[in-house]
Amino acid sequence: MDNQVMPREQLGVCAEGNLHSIYLMFNANDGVEAPLRSSLASVAEYLYDLTDQYADSAFNGFVAIGANYWDSLFPAERPAHLKPFPAMQEGNRSAPAIEFDLFVHLRCDRLDILHLVANEVNQMLEEQVELIEEERGFRFMDSRDLTGFVDGTENPKGRHRQEVALVGDEDPLFKGGSYVHVQKFAHNLSKWHRLPVKKQEDIIGRTKVDNVEYESEDKPLTSHIKRVNLKDEQGRSLEILRQSMPYGSVKEQGLMFISVCRTPFHFEKMLQSMVHGDGQGNHDHLMHFTRAMTGSSFFAPSLDFLRKDLD
Ligand code: HEM
Image (tube, rainbow, N blue to C red):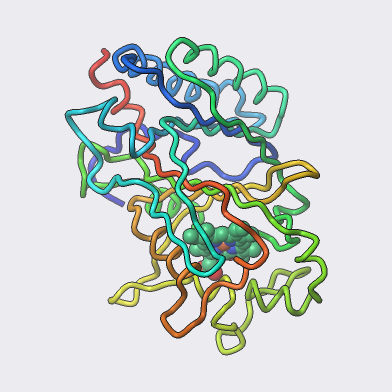
């Protein structure tokens, strides 16, 4: 951990998993930057306070600003590596970019509280933004993705979550903030469920019921785990913190994939490895059963950054 005092992070960035979530994607109206800066600081502070008030239900949340909108809102300063979503495509595997100006991420173990808060947040921003997308996520079984596989097992744990997810001294003004990538994946579950379980397990690289990782030599090069478990030149693991949850209805359902990280490059490398593969023709076969419908890039600044010119 860095030695200096951390600015207050938005508590939803590194929070542990919940039972429910609401995702709100907004675009900003023209010419509202000054009042919107102040409203966003108020929303972030409000979510911070609710984390205490609804601690029993593990409420948490954060607000994040879109890569393409950042310069309108904060023209004087920009997180060092903030850039648009790295759209990519190969064969019928595509990761399109659909950007939004603002992302509000809300989670709680009570859906009624979430519903109230989402309405309140919408009202706090109402004059300045348009709500473009709303999605609701839920915990499925024992934290499984809708494919039936436990999702999140290899996520960083304890204080390591902060080390992975939050910008440190390398970018002092943005310390305590996080690079956020969101992809809404729609699964083709009828195709998936027609596969024998062993084939599904080979695609993930773990067993289904017991969630045991395959031995290294048994992991197919096309398995999800193999494609995303990457190392840098020094042999250190490239890590991200995943805050994904299943979402949807009978008509369309899948995974709201959310990565938070102190750098955007880990996510990008992993996505490249899934879509383009390893250069030897091995891409991620999970991509045959799910389709990325969106891809958005944001930065969730610290609470202190959001408040800094307002006090
Ligand atoms: C691991 C599902 C997309 C990065 C896993 C695991 C599952 C899973 C079941 C194994 C358990 C675990 O460690 O969490 C999915 C599904 C996806 C998806 C259903 C989309 C439909 C992505 C994307 C990325 C990613 C887009 C990054 C670009 C990772 C990482 C791990 C992981 C880093 C941990 C690997 C390890 O160290 O073992 N995913 N994933 N996933 N996934 Fe995904």
